[in-house]
Structures are given as C-alpha cells and as structure tokens.
Length: 450
Ligand code: AMP
Ligand code: SF4
Image 1 (tube, rainbow, N blue to C red):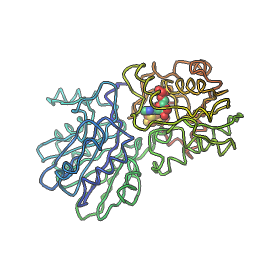
Image 2 (cartoon, rainbow, N blue to C red):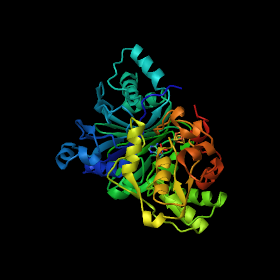
Image 3 (cartoon, rainbow, N blue to C red):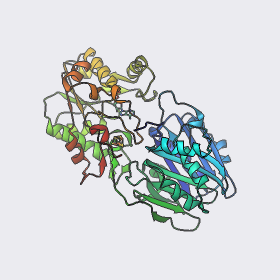
Image 4 (cartoon, rainbow, N blue to C red):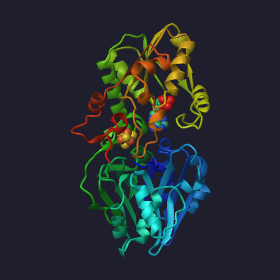
C-alpha cells in the first residue's frame, strides 16, 4: 500500500449564515486539537470564492480584519495536522481552484488510499500538480469530468477515489458535504440560525450555538442550496467502519462522535481496564490530558483515589511528531512535571490513552521514580499500537512503533515501570458499545480495510 502525505485534520462548513466566515473561525478554534500546523477559510459571496490560509494556529492566522475580507454567507474551513518535514504553505487547505464552471474550494479530513494511482493517471492526461496533497486529485477529477453540472462532477470524482474522507466543497453559490462509505472520519450536521453547519466534531456546534441534527451518513452526499433543506444523496451503500482511535485519543471529550460521547467512551475504557486487571495501589494518576477520562473511570471502578500527580504545561504544543528523538525527549520534559509531595513513597497506577514510540511513558516513569514514587504501574486504555494508520491519523511507520518491536516485558523494562498492561481489543470494543464490526481497529490488529 502506498503511503501518501496524510491529511489528518478538521473540517467545517457553514451555509446560509450572515456571519459565515466568523462562525467558521470559531469552529476551527474549537477543533484546534485536530491540527495545529496550518489553517484556512474560504468563503463564497455568490460571485467569488475568497480564501485565506497560512501556517500557524487559528488565532495566529486570522484577525478581525482578515475575517471581514472573507465575505459571503457560506464558508468552509480546515485545520491541518503537522507531519515531520511537510510544512509547506502549499499543503494548507482549503484547496482553491478556478475551472470551467467557475470557482471552487475543498477541505478534506482523511487519507485517500489510491491517491498515487489516481494522480499518475491524471498526470498522464496532462494534469499539473502544485502540492503533494491527495486532496488536489479531487480538484483535477472535478475539472476534467465530462459531466456538465458540479453536483454530477463531484459524484463522478468521489466514485474514483478510495480511502477515508470527510469532505466539504464550496462553490460560489452551493456547498456539498460527503463522507466515505466506511464513515472512517467523523462529520456531523447541525442547524445554526437559519442556516446549516457541518463539522468534524460536535464541540464546534456548542461554541457557535448550533443545534446537532445528525451525523452525515457513511456514503452520503449532502447538497446545500439557498432557501432549501439540505438534499441527501446516497452515493454508496454505507458499510460503517468508524475509526476507533477517535474515541481513544483524537476527538475532544466534549464531542459526540459516531453517536456517542467521547468522554463517556474513555471512562468506559478506564473502567474496563480496572475490572480486567485489578491491582492494588495508593492512587490513580492520569497522564494529562489524554489519560484523564480513563483514569477517572479506573478510579471509580477500583475505588482507588484519583489524584493529579502530573501537571501539564499547556503552552507547549503536542510532543508526538518531532524530527529527532532528542527533541521529543526534551519536549516531554518541558510539558509534564510531577507533584513530588503527593507521590513520594506512593504506589501509583499511571493511566495513558496510548503508547506510540514509548517516549512519553519512559519519560513519565523516570520522572515519577526520580520524584520518589515507590512503584509505577503503567496502564494503557487501548490495545498495543502495532500498525500504522493509512486512513488519516498520523502514526509513525511500524519500525518506530514500540509495541510492534518489543514484547510486553521488553517495553516494561524499556520504560522502567514495575508493570505494564493494555486494554484488550475485545474490551476496547465493549467499551464503545460496538456491535458487529462497525469500527476500524487496524492500528491495533494490522487488519486493514483495503
Ligand atoms: P509516544 O510518546 O510516542 O509513545 O506517544 C504517546 C503519547 O502520544 C500518548 O500520551 C498519547 O496521548 C499521544 N498520542 C497517541 N497517538 C497520537 C497521535 N496520533 N498524534 C499525537 N499524539 C498521539
Ligand atoms: Fe483509526 Fe486506527 Fe483505523 Fe487509522 S487504523 S482509521 S487510527 S482505527
């Protein structure tokens, strides 16, 4: 399988609202956790599509003045996640294009698994690409389609792509939202004022005062036209395979994703962890912030007190993808510090949501032991991450995933913990009330959908 430049991000679309670009701005703000490298908004005023995008956080890129230039009653927006070495402004979204039917902008969350084949075919037919983003494929597919109407061209284009996508398209007068047949990445629909909003997570709705209507269905295309209810077109038969990692780590706890509240799901995972693998300790300590809900669940199930033994400095970005191991180690140290008087001489159960390279856990165990903890038992509220994701979550290659290369005991020794235990695959599914197999768990099993 070809690994292209991923888009693991947030998308939003506002339709038929007098302050569309402002609402898109606030929505992106609430979705900042899904991507901090770059962001952008395109608005449409019936005549033109206006776009502003740049590297940086939403609050850094946009000012009041800039938002005012994004005129019109519809707008789409995007937050882009960082990947090692790929920091070109060209790879920020929305992707804008002028073509024979007018102007168009696209935002995409997900990753197209046949992007290379599609791109090679397009290049053979004379297409010139400006970026490495697989989203640009869609622009070319739409521009080259033989169909006469944009709607038909979009349908034509999505039938040629495979993989994970939650997409929002904006033309000068219409907006379209589409989710892949697996519904891998989330996308919800809401009502705001007299208009509509679509967003990666419902936490965006809460901020802008929107009312949740429903999730966009897997394989569904929604068409937004002024003065009309959104029109639903079933492009593909839905075969749900939602990304379970949204529940484990990625989504915000106050969001309802795939019909369930993320915080509750994480608490369930912690409860299961305590139930399946009971162990005595003086306190449960979460790794902030990801481990907090599961640690609360663990504490409630076990009756062991929950204590914030590790403090997080909130003014430092995420530690996950940094070019060198040395930089990653330093950043974890800058980010987390222990409350020494609380943990000294204590037997701790430390709960985190996942282990990727092992950097965070190793550093935390060392830090807690140096602060005088008597024992540190690491508990992870998901199964070992053994395989990379090809559907839009940024994970390193298999060789850098610690659980793919070490046994449980080797990992425990590596991080210097007294014990290490993970949630089982089945217990994770039970925690999220899974029926049949409606979730993708490929990063824990290596069983990919394609
Ligand atoms: P590591 O230090 O490489 O083992 O990463 C583990 C930490 O990164 C955990 O605390 C997780 O909360 C967090 N994490 C897990 N998956 C991701 C991801 N895809 N992007 C960013 N951070 C992640
Ligand atoms: Fe989500 Fe993992 Fe599947 Fe990727 S492989 S979509 S992270 S569950």
